[in-house]
Structure formats: C-alpha cells, structure tokens
Length: 400
Length: 143
Image 1 (spheres, rainbow over the protein chains, first blue to last red):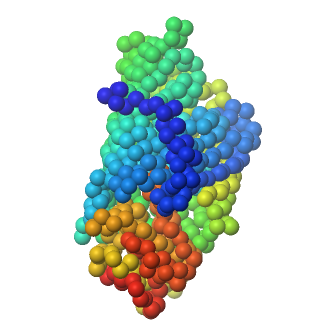
Image 2 (cartoon, helix red, strand yellow):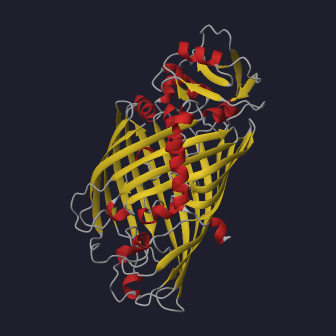
Image 3 (cartoon, chains in turn green, purple):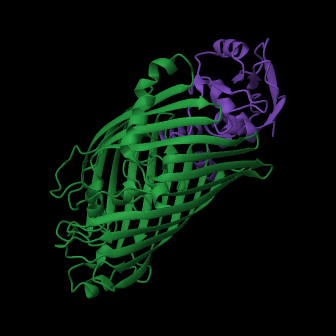
C-alpha cells in the first residue's frame, strides 16, 4: 500500500510542464486545453504573536501565485495540475510546490449521476474551503478560521498523494455528494517543525490519511448540510542527538458543516471534534490522548455586487476536558500558560472587486488565546507571551 | 410594524424582488442535434457546474454563458439554476483552481450566443425570453 501511495514529485512536475508547455501549441488549437492563474501580494502584521514572524514587524510575506492547466484527453479522461508559490512567513513552508496533479477518469456521467475518480496529487474536497484554501481569490478571508483551517497544518490538509472519488446523485429530494479519498502527504522537516516543535531534528512521515464526506442540498432549499470524517496516522523517528523519542501520532476528526445562502448574504459554519493520540515522542512509553473541539460561523454580506463584507467568530479548545487550559501549567511545570489551551478569534474583512479580475481585501482579527499558533505539540512560549493578540492584513489579487 | 418591515427588508432584500411578478426566465437553448427535450433544474445545474460533461448520446457538452453582469445571466442563475450569481461565481472559481472543472465559455452578447449554439455540436446556452430563436432547440426546464 505504501508503495502505491508513494508520490514522485519530479515525475509529476515533468508531466505538468508537458501539459502546460509542451502540449500548449498543439492543444491551444483545440478547445481541450485550458489554463488559468492568479497572483496575490499583501502586507500583514501580527505584533504579539509568531503567526507571521517572530519580531512582530509589518511583513510582505503574503505572496501567493499559481498557474494551472487542464488537458482533456478524451471525454472521460483529463489531466490537471497546478504549480504554486507561497510565502506566508511562519504560517507555512515558503517555496514552489505542486499543488495538485492528477489524472481524472469520469467513470459515470449520466444526467442524474456523476462519478469521478482521481489518481495522483488531489485536493482535499471534504471541508467547505479545503480544496482551495491556498488560492487567495477563492478564500472568503485572507486568514481562514484557524480552528478548522489551522495554517501550520495547511500543506498536509490541503491535498494528498493517492486516490480520490467524487460522486453526485440528483433526485427529487435534492443533490447528494459523496467524496472519498485515501493518500498521504510528504512532510519535510521544516513543515514538521511548524507543526510539532522547533527543536525536532528527526523525520516525520504521514502513513496515511483516509477521508470521507457527504453534502446534501435539499430541493428548493437555500441550505447545504455536510459531514466529514478523517483518520490519519503519522510517525516520528528521532536522530541520535534528538531530545525527543520515536513517536506515533493518530489524528481523527469528525466534522459537521452547514451553509445557508440568500441573495445578499450567506452564513457558513463548521463544527468539529478531533482526537489526537500521541504514543512515545515525549519519552518512550508515554501515551496521551486528548480531544480538541472547534467551531466557527462566517457571515458574508454583499454590500454591492463588487463589495463584500465578511465577519467571523471562531472558537477552539485544545482539550475538551480542560477548556480553560488550566492543566497546562500543571503538566509543564509552569512553562506553558493556560491560554495555550484555547483560541477565540473575531474578524472583519472587506473585499472589493474592480477592473474585472482584480480584488483587494483588508481584514482585522482580534484574538484571545494562543491555542492555534504553531508549533502545536511543543508550543512557542518565548514569542507567544500575550494572551491577547491582533492581526491585520491587506492583499491585492489578480486572476485570469 | 413599519420598523419591523424595514428590518425584514434589510435582512431579506430578495423579498422586494419577489414581491412583484418575476419576469419569465431566460430560455435554455441547445444545438439542434442535442437529443434531449427537457432537463430538470438539478440536471441543468450539473451541466453548468461542469459535473455533467457529456450528453446521454456521448457527445461532449459545450457550455456557454453571458457576462456575469448581464441581467439575463442573473435571471438565468436564479430562475433556471436556482443559484445566486455570487454562488455560481464562487463554485466556478473553486472548480477552476482545484482542477475539477473549467467555467463555461463567456460570450459577449445574446446574438453571439445564438450563433455559437447554432454552429457548435453539443452546445447549450440561454437567451432572453422573447428572443427569436431559429436553427436551435429550446429545452424545456422542469422544476
């Protein structure tokens, strides 16, 4: 199974280049080849946290651009890929990456039932904003609610290498989507440090991530209801000089989501419980399990066809049995403060579209607690000394 | 009472729109060789969201749309697809940037739309109600 899931980025990069460049002159003559892209650059500042950087200065590390291509091989097969460059400061690994690159087989395509299979690097389609959380123009806000869309975990959660299925069935009752995927995501050391601890020297590997989700849109209703399940295992292998032991991690998430749309406004919400079990890592033989919980509500209001106001409230507990984080100082000899056990964020964002394909977005976040600031397993208690912290960001985007 | 009504209209501005008789929805039009006489709104939505990409006879579906700002597009989106235009735009962007699909081909005018539908096998689009339609098939849209 592991061999089946192994991903060769160099091979896929070559394939993507073949699609985007090599086939272009041939395919542009036909209408079976499409390409799109986006560029976004911004400024942001998080003075009293390590969310963007460690010194709290204004940062231009809010750069995102991508170029994608789709080649329709025949009515049932498509090859699609996207190259992307991201720089988000401390939020995620900086650099060029293959965002997705997959072969899509349309297995069933009747008027009422469609089934598509994907093999390669596919996007996570199980959450409301998961498939395009790394594409600036498709996100409702510059910084998504961190309870669900934790940026330190972004590269792992945005997609995987493996196989996926998407199906939609329409009936008189409504439309039912069923999505399934099985894969794994490479975890370079820099990324592992953002998730686990700045002090790790060993290697982290995701063994698998298995997800299933379903969405239902009742006929005549303006709402959508969904549920998604996630099961994933990771392992950590120490180096000789490591202060940590070998470890295994299990993450399991159950999430419900809901969306209601009106002509000028929309509400979206996701609610989850996540089991995180650690075996070893802190020391050989250690076993620890805790359940995190989180939820957000995101409101959209169309002030004009071009201008949109967003407001969100996001709430996260690292341990549902210790919502105030009072056990943390006791467990760590006072090194980790209680406010690392939760995070509550209130945000306002304003977007304005102009000139057809341009958008500017500005937003502000008021945050209490540091439970969703990376690293997650061994938190950064040196920079994140403030229980209350704020963030502002402005980003200009263009797409084609 | 009046204050309550004002608050309701502020929250649900669409109530204003639907208070009067809505205009007839745009006509859904396809190439004459398309062997489909009627579609449900759900099936039409599948076509415009690029989930449905081939007709039952195996021909590829070629989907056209008018500019997002046009009144006909906005009527089509709400009346025929039962989606608000911003939802449609969001979904197309999501499809485009996750590799799942590509948005419909945008054409500048209804006249150009009709011309493309007449000459492109597998084509589907929409035209304002009342437009003269020749050499193309009007598809009945069922609830």
